[in-house]
Each structure stands twice: as C-alpha cells, then as structure tokens.
Image (cartoon, rainbow, N blue to C red; front, side, top):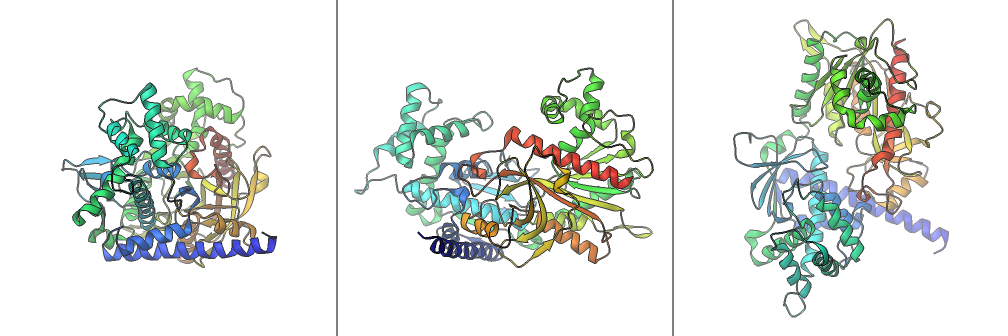
Amino acid sequence: MIPGCYMEQAAINARKARIAIRTIKTVSDALALRGYYKPSGKSGQTLADGLKMLSPEIYGTMNDPRIIELKGLEYVLERLPKGIEKCNRIILTAQEEFENTSFEIIIPPKRRRTSYRVSEKEICFVITRGISEIYDLLTHLTFLTIEAGKIYNQMKKRDGDLTREWIELEKVVNRKTPLQGDELYKAIWNLSILLGRKFQDTRASYDYLEKYANDWNDANILFKIIYGLAKRVEEEKQCRDEELLISFTPSLRDIIGNQSYSKKWASDIKTKLYELGLENRPLHVISANMHSVVNLLYGYGAIHKTGRKKKAEDLYRFINEIRSERKAVREFALENGLYELPDVSGTHIDCQIIDVSKLAGIKFHPELNFSLPQKEKPVILVMDYAFGAQAFEAMDELLEPIETENGNQQFNFRSISIMGKAGILPGKKGDIMLATSHVFEGTSDNYLVDNYLRKEDFSDSVNVFVGPIVTVFGTSLQNRDLLNRFHTSSWKAVGLEMEGGHYQRAISSAMIRGHIPKDIRTGYAYYASDNPLESGQTLASGSIGEEGIKPTYMITKIILQKIMDLEK
C-alpha cells in the first residue's frame, strides 16, 4: 500500500474507533439507567459489535472466530471474581449491608472491587468507584461473552455430536486431583486444539492461572474456566430462563454522579487533620501508591535504626533491597510522623498523612538532595490511586472547604502532584511522561497543565517524554489506530491514562470557586507500564515488575524535593 493510501486508511480506522468508543459509552450509560440487559439480546449485541469494531489491543485475537484470546482472558479473569464464568445472574449495586449475611465476599487479585457470591450462579458487584467502574465491568463481561460463544462453537461437530477434544476436557474438569506429568501435557495439547492455539500459548496460560490454585482452593483452573464459559452458553440456548442477565439496582442508579462515597472519604481526611491539629499547616497532596513516599522518607532511617545497614549506595538498588523490610519501615514511620488512614468509605482509596515537622533528626539516603524547611513545616497527604472518573469526585470533594462552627474553613493547599503509571506511545516500559495537557478521548474536553515538573529535573538514565496525555474511558478500550492518530497527528500525544483529565477538571473547578489559589503548584508525572502500540507490550502482557522501581522512585524523589524547596 502506498504511503498516502496507508495514511488515509489509518484515519478511517481511527474514526471508526472513535465511533465505537462513543457507542460503547452511550449504550453503557443507557443500560445503567434502564436497569438491566441480556448480553444475548439486542443491547448486548450492540455492545459486542462496538467492542469488535474497536478491536482493543488488550483483547488481541477477539475478532478471530477460530482462536480463543488467552492473554486477554488472563487479564480479565484477574479483575473479576473467581467463578464468574459460571454465573448467569450478575447484579451491579451500591453499597448494601452484606455484613450479616452468609454470602461469600470475593476481591479479585488485581482490581480493588468487592463482590459477593449470592449463589453458584449469581454474583453481586458493589460499585463504589463511579461510572468508570461500570464501563470497566461491562467491557470485561462483553469480552467474556464473545469468547464464551467462540468456545461453545468448538464443543460440537457439524452432526451435533460432541467433539473428541470436548469429551477429553470434561474428563479433566471432573478430576479430583491436579494434572501432572504426561497427563498434563496431553490435556494441554487437547485444550490447545479446542482453543485454536499453540501448545506453548496454552501451557503459558495454564501456568499463569495455576499460581492462584492455593488462593482459590482449586486446581486445573484454565480447564475449568474454559469449560464453564461454554457450558453457560449451552444452558442459555437450552432454556431462556438461563440466559445471562446483568442488572443495575435502583440504589446504584441513584448514586451515579452523586459522589456520596467521595464525600465520606474526604470528610474522614479533613476530620483527621483537625484531630491532629494540622488544619492550618501548608498541605501538599500527592496521588501515588502507598509505599514510595514512605520508603523514601523513612526507609534509610529505619534500616539504620535496626543496625542492619544495607550495602547499596545507589538509591534505587537500596529501595529494591529493603522491599522485604516493609514491617520495620512502617513501624519506624508510625513513630516519626506517619498517620495511616485506611479507607472505610468504600472508595478503596487509602491515605497517609505525614507531618514533616516530625522528620527532624531522621537520616535520609544520601541521594535525597533536600533539607527540611526550617520555618513553616508542611504536611503531606498521600492518596492512593483513584479509578477513572472517580478521580474527579475524590479531588473535587477533597478541595472543598470543611464546615465548622465558625463557618467554612479552607485548607492551605500548596501543591497537588499526580504520579502513576500510564501507557506510553513513543517509548517503552519504564520510561517517564510529563503532561503538558490532558485530552479526553471521545469528547472535546481538553485541559492545559502548568506542570511544575520539568524534563531537566530528571536524570539522563531514564527517557523522559513531554507532551499531551490522553485520558481514556478504560484500560480495555485502547485501539492502535486511534492511539497512533493521537501520537502522530498535531496532537503529538505521548501517553494515555485514565485519571489525569478528571483530576485537572476538579482542580480547575476548585480554582474557579476560590477553594484553592490559582497559582497552586500542579504536577503530573507517569511511568510507562505498557506500550499499546507495540505487540507484546500491552497491559495483557503482564506487570512491569522491578523495571518500575527506578522511574517510580525517581518521580517520588523529585516531587518531595520540590515540596521541600517550595516551603523554604
């Protein structure tokens, strides 16, 4: 294909992707308001058609009817409750009182969401993180439905008899003991034929999911999931009452956009600040994980206190070495100005308050190039990662003044720093991105960012890319042509993530309403967890692992240095 034709086709594909995303969002919103739908019905088919048109990179071979997508399946199963493949009743609800019931509580390995197993075929999801969580769930469930239909089509031969591969799969599923040796290899080979995959691919997925055998109190997990998905479709076709039904309770529809969970979350933080007498001190907010700030401020001092001096002079090697010392670091931190605020609101956003005035006398790692402010002692509020649009609700409520007996009390917000992981477009895993703006995917909402973090702040040992960041609807809705369009067109986007635009929307709103000063320092820095434009580097290919230590702690170090310098 000549270059001009290729560019024109890419533009057409990008437009199709935008239409598909808009369709998925519109249908999802409508279904949440309607209250229910069946994936096998018209609405469900519209969602499936939209997902197929979008053809997200994370779902790989989803559109090929001959091949079952295994990496995408692994990704989804780690973010949904165990046993989801058997369920034909899925309910999305607001926080209900389940404490006094016998329902089994299930939290997926890699997504902080709570669900309850009501029966073998019914699961209830508690939605506390807003509309983005609904998009996330419906996308995953639609993908599972598509793959289940493909597996079902491999159950029987044209004459209606069960295939040999399916009969062998049933034998494996009915086993009481784990597969071993030759039996395992034969079973994986048989399953590979059923799935249309190479033996090595199926073996890799078997091994990947089998690591949860102890946690799930089960074995031969991949075989049982494949079997369960197809059997559910078979039961649907045999009886209409067994069709998969996804419902949204009235209580959920009432709270969408109401921010009730975030109100409680923010109120708890402000109340704690008052209890500690910190309400008038300079306040710096960092959206980050729950380990990097604590490890940098307290890790070196904690290890020296124990007498177990570490050999590594390099900061990042030192951080890697003390990962096994988490308990000692935490105990030392709690004695020296750290206050933990585990979430009790349902937002799943834990927090930490750090009183910098209590850091005096603590030994810092030699590579931390800052000294503590001598006059005004700041307070650092570390908030765990929000999820998608939940970031707006959380930040919006946090920046609101608190009602007191003497009227509304504003806090002394001095800086807001957002760090986290994101997909990168021009680089590779472990690189760093600094946002100059946030561009919402699928809408005309765009926000300029006066980012106080600069490329020259960072070491040359890590690649740093500066430019617009696309705020996307969901991790599962990434299309290569659309992302490439954002990167190569005049947008010149360098990355994609889910929360930055929502945070900036809340910050801009707070400035307009006078809740925070217009010259407040804001910073956005991300480390690359994946590259959706590169095969084998999508989120489905696995976590970044130890590669993420250096960029994560480099960003954290620079944010802390900027906070201390600002207060001088």
